[in-house]
Amino acid sequence: MKIHRICALGASAAACAVISTNQLAAQTLDTQVVIASRIVEPLAEVLPAVTVITRKEIEQQNFDDIFSVLQGIPGVELSRMGGPGSPISIYARGASSSQTLVLVDGIPFSAQGTIGALSPLETIPLQLIERIELLRGNASAVYGPGAVGGVIQIFTDMGGASQGVHASMTMGSKGTQQLAAGWSGKAGDTRLHFSIGQNSSRGIEALSHLKYPAVNPGLNGYRNDFVNGSLTHAFSGSSKLRLHYMGSLLSSEFDNNYAASPADQWKNRSKTEVLGVELDQRLSGRWHSKLQMSQSINDQSTLTNNQLNASYGSFVTKHQTWRWGSEYELTARDILSFGYNSTRSSLDASHTGYLADWSEIPVSLNPSMGMQRIHGGLNATRDRWNFQASLGREMLPHNIHGNTYLLGAGYQLGGGYKATLTRSNALQSPTVGQLYDVSFGGSQTLKPEKSKSLEVGLQFNGPQQQWRVVAFQVDYTDLIAVGNTLVSDPFWSLQNIMQLENVNKAKNSGMETSYKQSFGRFNLGFNLTHQTPVNVDSTVAVMNKSRNFGAFNADYALDAKSNLTAKLFATSKRKTFDPDANKVDTAGYAVLNLGYKRALDRSWTATASINNALDRTYYHVAGYNNLPRTYMLGLRYQGQ
Image (cartoon, rainbow, N blue to C red):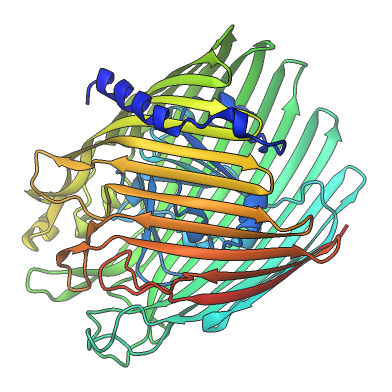
């Protein structure tokens, strides 16, 4: 798609999205700020396409887990094989699940196996989330290698301005229980916060044992135990130190169509730990600096009858990072940013390899790799123009270097209207497993995956109305896949193990439309994504990605204390793999969720929700069931 076609597409969609501002009432929409360039700025000023989900919105719509929060975001599809607790797959603008960078309080926690840098989103409990920021498209120049499809930043609750005890309890269908409690307080210049909780459910039968006799006929439940804490100490008005820890242990049952016996019980066990220390300093009236040291551990294993399954194995990833970043105000409207990052990632893997005669051999490895980057940027405003220029120098394993950029411009047309244009590229470094696990085809000759993105947008921002239309095109090259060459290792080459290579190309073009309006007692939201993902130079069908999907949200205030909410998500058909690994057309679907919230007094809030209110049967992945109609009742307490 040429640039003039992108502009035409964006302009035509914008014309459809405009609604007269004369119809707006007195209620105003919240002004949100984001960190799209690591500089706090109003959402209306951000140039790349960004979505922000606040704690208020999470509570207002009675979401039950992070999957339901992210479902329906423009440009982003999600799927999972089973109900809540199952692993979540993310497809942002046609990118794979391993190509979206996920951060918890700025800290990466992705796995580093040979299937890619997957981040176990399902291990992050909704009760800990303060807000989520999602930047779509290339962001390597800002966040480093890994942000090919975009960035999901999850900010956990660190106490904020609230003090005292807080607690919540939700009970519902399928034996669902969601329990959390915590405390926030302040002693002098030190602020403390602590939370603990547990979520669980009996679950559903993910695969029908009548259709697939190898699977266990029991339900697939889950249990998630979590803890979160932070300490913030202000040394002065210009300097503070923050220590933060989050730990989550998720055990979720799943159905295995290749099980040896239907009596076998299968579980995924995923443990996530994130620890960060940050020194935040105002060095002068214009110079702001942050130094962050962090470590994350991602421990994933598969159990059969509560014993480690050696064939599936265990994989422990550790990321140790330190990052220094600074912002310098050249003028009140021009901000210069610069910094340095260093990350060491290691993989402790133990699994079974397969020989040419299909006999098994144990594999154990513990490699690591280091990466560094230097980055800088400038956010500037001139009259009606605002600009962003972000540049990065990426220093990857095996002396592979690369340059990344994000260049953008916005022009205020007047009357709340603004046109935007961004151009960017991104790199995705091979994982530790892809480089070093020869039994799965690992090769140290792999190059980074690459992408280039062009984005044109038109938006309107008013006190009661916001909308944005974005036309985009993304080209992916050097994608890692199994090639036609045997691995270089003599032993594994004799076992006919093929080497991973940079062999694939893909592209995606499309349009994202999002709209919010507030009038009277109503808050309405709508978004729609149309895309055309294709595999270049290949007849292989694109998997797990639909051409059209979107969502509609409505919130109605019954009175000053209570409100009703509704969310409708819909998607068109797509191709997925069924449990027998066949490529099949999977039908589109629409799901309606309803919610009710009432403030009982200043401290207590009651909630109720009906998920899949129309009791639809639908599939993210062919053959894998989702929840039928379910009911949830909740009670929250927030000390004053």
